[in-house]
Image (cartoon, rainbow, N blue to C red):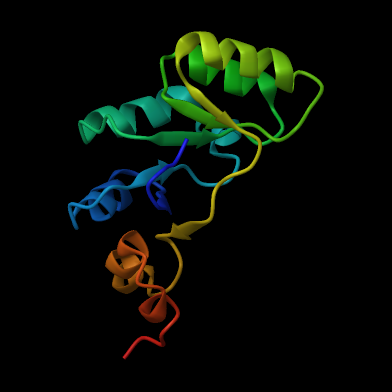
Length: 134
């Protein structure tokens, strides 16, 4: 499965910023966000923006959090390899959800200057992604 470029969002303002260019995007939560914010938080952030595209909640190494995310109907999760990975992956498949063992490369909107590089990141204009900010 090919996903659009990924962007890490830390809340609704970041999500709106990620969607502002009007380009295909995969939304990622912050690393391990399921451990401190939970699946309900992620579901509500996505719902508040009426976002139905690819979105992945990072569950770190916690299979229970990944299972919870899938039970909540979230479209996908990231779960670090663990003894229960195969069972969670089987459940994700039955739900039509995506489960990844690691996050895809992503632009973190909390990083300095990330907003200025967002369109270049989403369009694959790699010459301008790492250019110093003026």
